[in-house]
Structure formats: structure tokens, C-alpha cells
Length: 96
Image 1: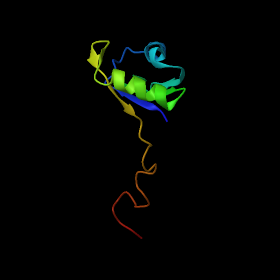
Image 2: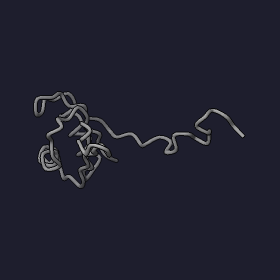
Image 3: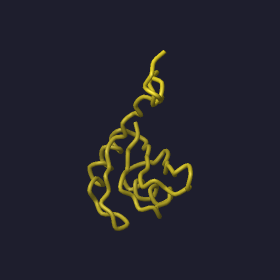
């Protein structure tokens, strides 16, 4: 399971997140998605920690905390839904 971290500064780095979350346990992986077209960070990220207990502790302590001038939104990451946006429908609304 991983942690969703939202409302991040666009200046944040993976090292910044790693250092902050390391206060609550071992950090296995950090991801900061960026916009495909501009390359700019999207303002959220994901952190994977060594255990569920460490994740729960980090969520409890950091959700709503001010960090780098912003109030963080921290919770368990939800799995991506779907995958194919059209879900089998044709984009024009017509079915053959």
C-alpha cells in the first residue's frame, strides 16, 4: 500500500518527501508525477513505507500539517480506476 500526499508545493523534491517521511519509518519509494506536456510537477505524490504501522503513523501526523507553506493532504492511496477511459464505448457516442 502507498500513501497519497496532496497539496504539495511545485518546488518539492523526492529527497524532501523522503526526509520528511523518514521521521516516521523507512521509506521504500517516493514518486512525484509530472505533467506530460510541460514537465511541471503536478502538486501531489506517493510515498511507500516499510510497514502499514509506519504508514498509519505518518498519515496521522502529517495529514493537515503545514509543510513548505501548504497544508498537506495525506491519506492511503486508492487504486487507479478503469484504465481505458472509453470503457468500450466509441468516442462519438455511436455504437456499431
